[in-house]
Image (cartoon, rainbow, N blue to C red):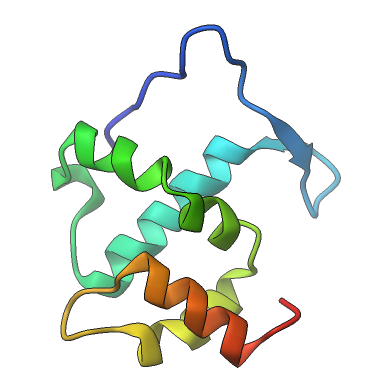
Length: 101
């Protein structure tokens, strides 16, 4: 998987994972990226680093990264447009499908 360097002068923020361990928000962002690739049929290894960085930097991705994977999968179907899955539609659909997720 392409590695995107951290922003200079900024340490990644962390939060408590469901297993009790700390996980960085970047880790969850990469998990979301891999899920998005899976749902759109793209290989995460073939996405250019600059596209990965742009994906991870989107505010919708930060919001989606707080949503459980099963909710994301449920919302992906209605949000999909052909083989694409626009993240803003995905987030909007999450809010409709599971408003309190």
